[in-house]
Image (cartoon, rainbow, N blue to C red):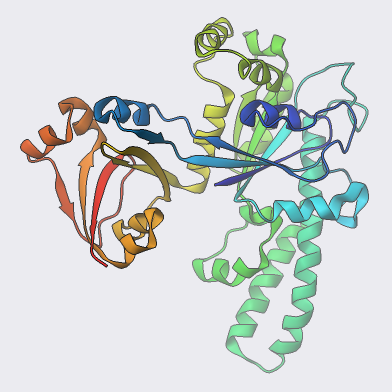
Length: 364
């Protein structure tokens, strides 16, 4: 899974990126500090993996991973190339989902690119730039399809209709992800790779004081109202505190989270939201050599899940021996699960569930 972090300059994108990846991306109080996108791969925290490792005592434990891409701060006019904008927009095309960081804190020491803090204006600047870029792509495609449609070909006419439908919505500032399309229409739009079709999570970056305050920050309230209109989730994070957490030992981290009344670091919330947004789940393989987590799309069948491990597993798939995570943890060993008759043998049509512990049988 690849998540692209976007936002206006100086909203805390690089601070957040540094915190969650410890990649040391350059971070400074001036616009366009990030030009080439910084990429960081982080392991996905999953307590189930630790529990399975306790049971199996394997030689190796391998978590699944997520890629964060810190895309440079966009500005008004980015779709026309302002602030090196076109280059930045092209980086967004390569991610699975967008993490839109919005500044929801006041700080006279951190310059705001537009002079004052206004999260809704900031969100709309970026959303409009992405819409303008999408309209440009659509208009080029429409030009070609209109010429082809003169032949009366049904497929071309159907594509023309959906292109015009999407263009009309974009012209009303509605992002592609919010346009209601049939499965057939979605299929016809797939090749357009529209920027505004990317699912989005809004990250409201708040100050340390707001983190410990019992009252919700007014800026955050506005962001939540805005996000609710497009069915998007908002995560409230203090990038500064997240950065401090990464410097601490596990014990110190627990103490600091307790001090701020937090149950978990912001990274954990962000990854969980990313999984939910993209419809992802985790299954496990467990044995004396390795306990490992694997990420797949919800609805994936057993042979394709096996293919995540190795293409030979999918090609020569015979069956999947499946046990439920809870059964394994309760009974304490795979042997005990078998003894109780709780190990299931599943065929090619089995849809893998989140938390399944699987041994694939195959023959090539």
